[in-house]
Length: 293
Image (cartoon, rainbow, N blue to C red):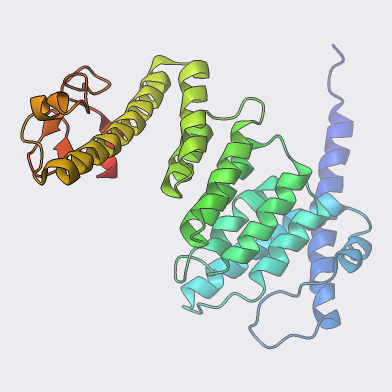
């Protein structure tokens, strides 16, 4: 292996210092070119102007504007100025100059999405920035993860979140949690059939027993909800026929509505309360169903 050349290393270090100094100077030179109010924050040039001023060193320029965005956010938050008009432009400029600076989208979106004072209260801008990054980096599951949460928690659009989590779950080497989140959010927006498919896929393909157990738990919860709905319909039919509610399972058996005592997915008999309602045996343990209720 060739030994490092100390002279070359020294020259490279000196060049880096010169470039960083030049970048800072160029950044300051931009300010007079962009009209701005006092204390309104750093100037935000067009991408073409920034590329020209930084002599094509786009990565250096991107790092500087990403740093500017962080400092701008921190300074305005410290000053309790809850509006951030230049935050999204700075983040987009940094990312556009260097699309490999994924942090500008991945973490910048958090500066944008939440309501003040925690963030800028601009979830639409966060979504746009993350979607741009996903377009450039379709195999980075972290971006889908972040976008899904912005859509769910800040945009209040669980269906969009479910679709994003589902798309991310199909990315090679994606975190299995994305499939879990997709199924949960699809269930929340009553996309029950698709949620069932996702949990079935998880049960079949999950790489560890804990995830498979979680998937089975959710599939059992779906089965219980279907069973209880069916039993409720049978009780209603019995009531219409006799004028009273069934008081025991044998009432439904004698009426030809049931072949025997129905069991839940864990093998415990369902409970009949005598007023048209049904429920689970206390011994049944289906966490997903208990969490939903």
